Length: 310
Ligand code: UDP
Image (cartoon, rainbow, N blue to C red; front, side, top):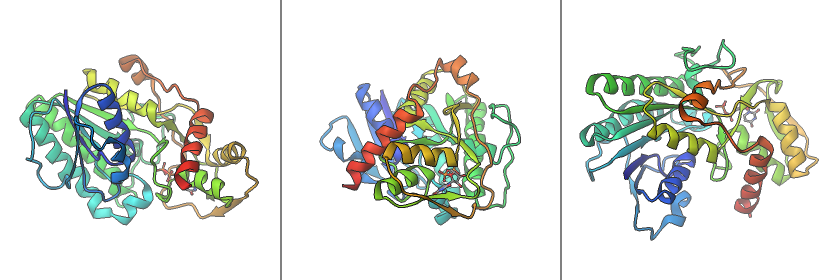
């Protein structure tokens, strides 16, 4: 197959390109390198089935055609990155998604939209099933990301309903692994890098808020299975293993064998209190669930950052 990946130089996008190439597909990656990095794809230089085009998804894409599948991943994704780029984030999810949907429509390609657990906002239902509509503050700081992804979901469904486009919606929960930016502000890699540098780990608020972390190879497997399924409605892809931020800090300290302490910092506004996917649908429809345990994933990520930091 010939596959287009927008946001292909990003953390998840670059792993997706690797997987598609390993499965012998031809891949064109689009990225404006706003938060993505060409070095994430450096190892693919010279690969004849792969091309990286520096392109902003907010501009119509007409350079090449004939795609069988389009993966739409282009967006700032960490709170620090999207808060630094509020308008750009809203445009990536709206105009950018539309431009990628148009490519898929013209080629009658399968369209896979990367959505997010942020669609649920600060959830009042726990764990979160796909049927939960969410609790998003539409004018809060996180809205630029949450609403952009919710709009992207709505637009994707509209293309499905209006044009009969084969569409998929993946609600990705916190994903981690190699190639995350050391300074992207997320808790992982933040803790991993701090531990490796012997600095105190920065815990926001009381640290009792929870997240559920999925290792990137599991996320990619979920995306691939979703692409070849025939499920147009949203599917959660994430780990059901829920941890508090404080537990995560202790785990990282233990794995990194570091004595560094903990530095308490204020909790950002509208920080979701609890987050855990209900993955019953992914199990049922995709026969998918994460395979990498949190300890194993953290070890792999720690090893990668140790090398990356030199
Ligand atoms: N967090 C933290 N210390 C950090 C960065 C984040 O305690 O250095 C907390 C943050 O407040 C949130 C959780 O870790 O409750 C996950 O934050 P992240 O930015 O990784 O992703 P989110 O799930 O909020 O998008």
